[in-house]
Amino acid sequence: MSLQLSHHDKSDLGESFARISTPSPLPERDFHRNDEPTPQTVEEVKTLLKLVGPVMITTFLEFLPGFMSIILAGNIDSPLSQHYIDAATFSIILLNITSLSVGLGLASALDTLSSQAYGAKRFEKIGVYFQTGVVVLTVIHVPMLFINSFTEPILKGLGQDAEVAHLAGQFSRWMLPGVPCLFLYELLRKRSGTSSMSLRGTAWPTGFNGIAMGRSLGNFVLPLLLVPYFMWRPHHLRQWWCQPWDLKAAMGYVGLFLRLGVPGMLMLAMDMWAFEALSILAGLLPDSVVAVAAHSVLVNVDLLVYTTFAGLSVAANIRVGNCLGADKPKTAKLARTVALTITLALTLFFTGLIFGLSDYIPLLFLDKGKSADLASHVMAIISPQKIVDGLNAVTQGVFRGAGKQRDAAIANAVAYYIFGVPFGALLALQCDLGVIGLWIGMTLGNFLALSTMAVLMKRYWDWDCIADDARARTNL
Image (cartoon, rainbow, N blue to C red):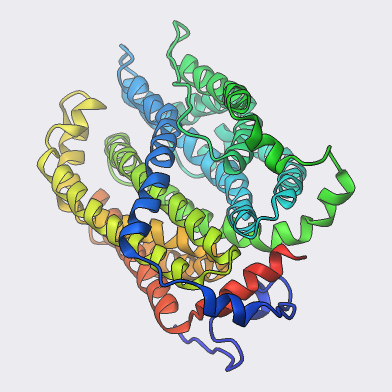
């Protein structure tokens, strides 16, 4: 990849796209920089771990409904149990591609805006940013509903099994009502700093569709679960909700929100869409029902482990953003290093754990048979992929905290769609490696994305300039 950077500001790969505005002069800059104490590693580890625990538990519990959907689908007493797994998988895939990646990705603008505003003690800005997020996500939700209403014909058009496509269409219709509530909860959670709250999906006597109903109901209840939190800590709500709803003020920040939210959406979407593309390709392999079932197990185990890395990613995002907003670039840089070091240790642990339990984990989802055997075989071989996956996730959190979403989005797009997914398809379909070929390609894409972002941070980031950008952004 050829990188051409201006001498004026080599810290930003895509300056003409990513810079929100030219930083205004900051007369206090030199005074504050000289005054910043040398950050202490031990203290930074303690600070980060205080953030990691609650965030990690929250992320894990939020993931459980989707994870349980696949387990419950695979354990329904029916000759169509494998079809149920495939249908739930494809329904969730389409929802992820067209809705969650877009909505949650756009909401990631608040990861930068609110963390930096909090660090700069501009608490009044946080409430306005939240209102802007509500406006943006409300508008984009309409096309999401329309697309997911046609899940069955879309899957048939992609060459998937007709019965699986029909079941997936039913599953999607029952999941859609809960999506707006999930978006609202996500916006509130990003602002409130809440600890673990979740509601698990439940399989009712309605069978397969009851799983989707339970997940939708869980999403509906999520925002309501924040009410006790705000009653318990009302000062948190008063701190950032300093004024009543102001549509004019909210609309005034739509441009700023989108400048960060669209690259953030692409950063998340490039990653999610690559996984979902592999699932579609798995449906085109010989004995597709077996391949998709095995691939579904691998994806859900990967996502379960990923909740740990996602928690670290959010903690790194918050800490880096707070430090930059408070004009402490040295501390922000140390927070980045500490977060990645902790992540590396955890990835090594998970690699060994998954390798050792690879014969048993698939049986949580599937009965003994070809799908479980295939999942076990591939899981053991690709277990080292967790190292790259975890480091990539936390690095993206650092990029969000620094307001560098565009650079990460470009890195993900090139790594996954020029190298990872095409190479995986080649190995799977042309070299007859099947599911394992798909995952080798995905691992390559992950590695290239991580390597690119690491080079950008090491060679092209000027942390003082990034802190100036953060302060200028909060002063808009």
